[in-house]
Length: 271
Image 1 (tube, rainbow, N blue to C red):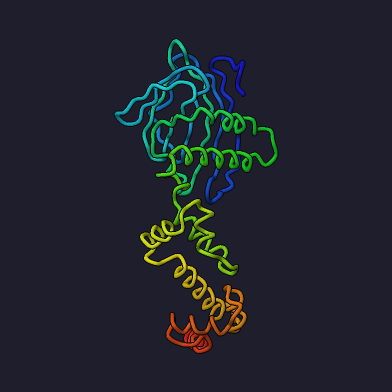
Image 2 (tube, rainbow, N blue to C red):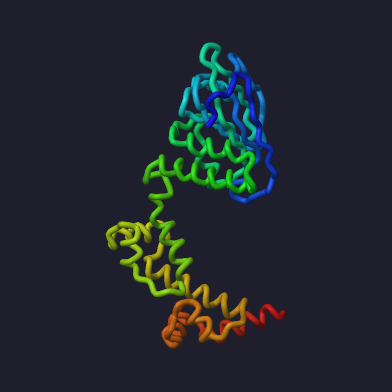
């Protein structure tokens, strides 16, 4: 926590740039601002979040101006011109974290101001990482947790929690080699089987069972052509213990037996 910090006192934490792919911490710190203390107009090359611990101030992006208080976060996005200033009578104290991030994370930072009082714990832990080993990883962990809360706050209609088909597709692609039933996938999502099947077809053009079969056969084809597996090995790895059933379904999808498909692919690769 930052209790007892004198007005005008700032503490920056020096970080290594580890060039992480999803969330890459760049800077973090804490400051108890003096009355009227300001920064900008300025442009950042990374995302920068300021969590207001106490006090008040203004944040300006373009022609929009916001008055912020404790429990709120103002968001600075790369390439945007921003300005912020502490209140003269009740200057704010804030903690900040700057980072690069992949598009799915950036999509959660489209609002200029976020109201997430529970984020105090995350920012306090970030601020407390300064003297710890592997501090970049620890900060990254807190940012992941923060993004989870931001996604949850959007509600099931917008958040990933409501992306039932996406979750089902990910499950199928991650578990195609294992026995699976459509009704079990629907139950895992908390959905009625018929509703899940209708929703899945609307978004993919296939029924869940058709998608499972297509995924398994595509993987088997890949195993044979890219990894040199036999028809029997590819069938087993793709979730087909019965090679005869596998061969019949493969022929239906690709118009030829698995062995001939693999031979043609090897012939093309050999020129």
